Length: 406
Image (cartoon, rainbow, N blue to C red):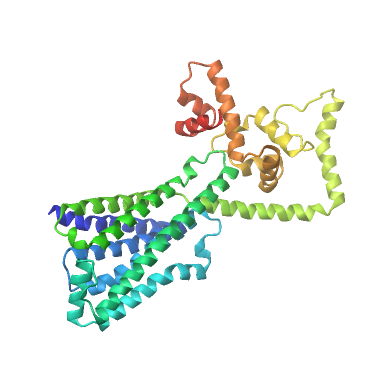
């Protein structure tokens, strides 16, 4: 009973997660979830092949092994496309040739396996199942059975290369994504993709485990409680990917929309750049508040007024210091750029040139300085109260930034 549960557990978990993704897509089209659904479907078929093999359904193995071979080479490329949907402003799925290149090995593998199985005699099929799939050796195989065994070995090499490719490219995409959101948001905790790197590492470990199992021969795991180890490992990883995927919001889509807005702002700025008369008129308009203050004997603008005649960084510092803008929860760079009468491209460049900081670091240094002041003036406040007063949405975010910027 327990052995049957171990054999079927990954397939059941995959099926449930994939069904939930399908239900979620009925209500709202979401590109990342569409690709995660494709990954879930391929993984479900993959572990269905596992179930058929370990349940000794030999009549179905020619079909299941064909589907297994195809899905085995599809799951990692599909997961990479999913990561790209989460992390890239221009995902891999936007290029059909890239998708074709990533999924081509999977399609070829399935086709080759299907053709060879069709060419094999029942005796050759039985020999292949017993000698290669069960015992993990090629000794005694001949003709089409040997050809299929070689094809399996080639697919294992391709699978290993895919694991390395997805690991390297996936980690790089996540790193670049975090650089982008650090430039655009003061609070990045809920937008973080650090969990992707953790799951990638676990996936690599499980893939190595799978290759080891195939190498030593699956017969060592048949009718053995050792089956529980890979079963629970694979099931846990699949559940984690599906659970998080159902709850993640596509932040890259926000960045795409903001990029479009930034491009429009750049076009407007370029159109205005050559209009000297308009520029001169705008400068005069900007000076009116300061002239009014001078005639009334006031040397400084009142709190809350932003002098657009000042350099951009001085205006930003004024917003932060006088209006304590950093205390706003989930502060975005685009909001600040709009208040300053500029676009985010100019603001990012100004921040980088003047301070060498990202927007996230710039805002959080103000918050931590304010937190220190609160601790001195109000020792009775708890850390959670201080975190909220300083603009943090969660205490954990405050503690993390406290360690980093104090």
